[in-house]
Image (cartoon, rainbow, N blue to C red; front, side):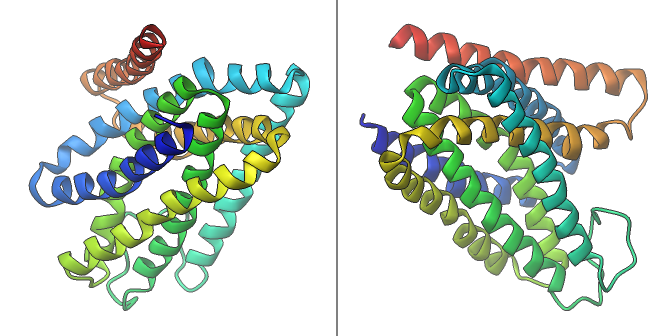
Length: 258
């Protein structure tokens, strides 16, 4: 397939299919499986960031110091961006971070904020997928796998918040699907924009690595520390390792196929 075809297929899979899977999971599966999905997603994100995306960003940039400086700036940027989102979310309600459920009296406000934030996040995912494919098809596949892995548990949470905010199941699914199309839009826009400015691709790869590291370390890992028993810890370690192993397997299979 052409690079554009790969971007279209994986952006669609990363958006629409992950939302559909998350909705089916939220409505039919046991809630206890979500922490397992999150542990797996952490491994996939960190594996992709450190074993694939970051090495390729350094190679494409040609300057290790400059590439890692972009990663550092990206992590700080995502921190500031998340702070702005949290401040906006907590402006009317006194809170200290992510609320697991929307307040009963917010008349869907939290659900709307979730949709706006998710649309922006999906758009950025599409840009990162496109940048990865424009560098190398194998890198693009691994990047898309990592993004899909963390999208499903995130979309499960978003879907449940929408339901709690007063949206019907059908409306929650419809709005989430509409939001997911931003991944496709981001991928297409980035493909045509980055084709004209190829020198920007290494910068986006470094930002992709920063995004994966930040989401894994700042957003997902703290939740795992709430379960401190030995059995839960061992499960988390094994599932994180399984996520990393998936990236290594994808690297081997795609590389062997090439």
